[in-house]
Length: 434
Image (cartoon, rainbow, N blue to C red):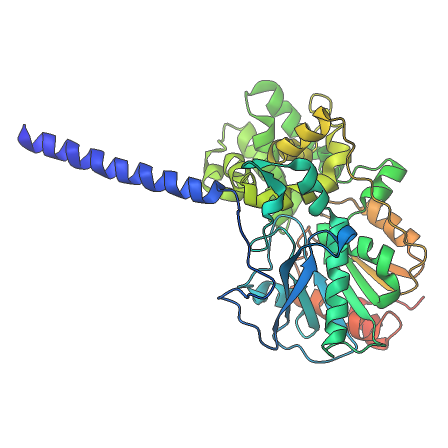
């Protein structure tokens, strides 16, 4: 009896420690940012050197004389002074640029190029205490300070800083690379500062303003992307009590990351139709909607949610789950539910993108996978049409463009260094000159 009591006591102590530890981790993860480093300080893990640079940026570019925050940018491992410097833009939820950036990811995109990575305002560690009021989110201020228009100005400030430091020649233009949501950011930057840009690569991306103009969804409905998969999904939803948001997230994430998206989605659906379970997907954070929602909802992640809503907000506010199935909008309605509610309750429209493309005379290379679940081929054709000097290349690939990594690196490098009309570009793309 005494031994049993002792075992019970030990078990209770262990459970108490575990519960306390989890509670602390939750508190730490969900705590409201209160401070940030001062304009003359550096992060201990990222001392300044020839590859790591700090820059003081206005918190609000519309009132640039007011307070600033300590931003930073990083140069690629093999960076050298060149008129072919490329700004590799990042954006959205992946938060790939930090004080401890893993450059291997970017080397698989632009290896062999001199490129610049910029720490995104509002992404860790450049958090803004200003967007919280009495420990609660000030959605109006967060939407204003983390608006991508502010980010465009940050990019331009970094370009000017490179010139000030002599890294970029005063008469040299930069190149721009943007994929997915960063491809939209690239188009936003070009619209205002295109005079400073030579060549641009837009990869696996879309255009919210053109989508609205031509009545095309920012991200296509499931039936449009995978008609066979959509048919099976409708049959499953009609017969089984499966959460539509949960299965949509699984299908979307699998489609976004797999080398053969449609085939992978159909395989999941056919297994489910034949009595299979979604249980295995609960162990992967990316396909577990509850974990995804938990990871994106901390106060420190508000910038990611603001940008997420910027891009899908126009469609999301009109989306009717009972009449259609759009994988991205299904789980987005949960992931950015706070911003969706804020806009609907206060009758605030989604961001209005105003992008001028007709005045940019530089070369624009558009790379698109025909099995990209996030963006349609149609909207990419529209992007090609509105830029005066653009070329669209399709590949049998998904959103991540991973089926022939080395070939894509050669294409990107050759274009950025030599342009459309070079014999080398024609050779690597098997394209004929215009």
